[in-house]
Length: 155
Image 1 (cartoon, rainbow, N blue to C red):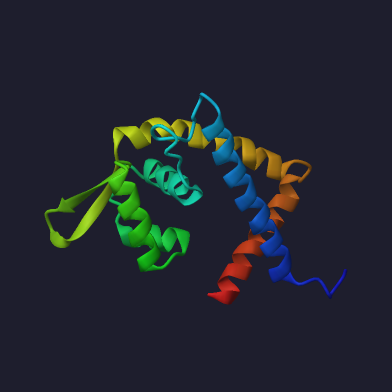
Image 2 (tube, rainbow, N blue to C red; image 1 turned 120 degrees about the vertical axis):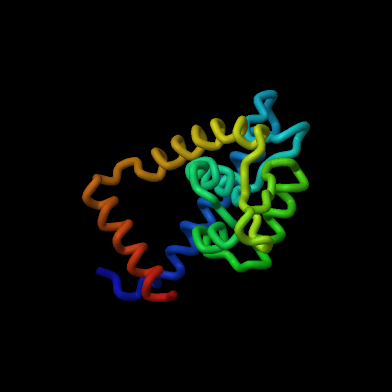
């Protein structure tokens, strides 16, 4: 085993490759007539917006608030605020007041976002399969355990 390999460096390379794939995929959809991840007329989704739509769709039976987005994606409040404001402006989400606390607004997908979510799911499924190619279930489980341990170590 090479002890000179830096975990952070390898994770950064992986992160860059994933980001590049997401950007390329966004451009691909934007350049085709399909417009799978477009909202309207070249109004493409960012990777984070796609992940948030997917998260909200998967949790549609629960009340999800901005703090849940912050926690799930490990992003700062200011970052979440900007992303959610843009999504609301683009009519991808609605912020709905709750009766028990005037300060809280639950997040709800609009019909436009629900429609685009099917394509997001397909894209993610294809990319996940590509990343898992040639990796046994055992190695995948070890990898996921290791990633979770690293996250715990640096939190």
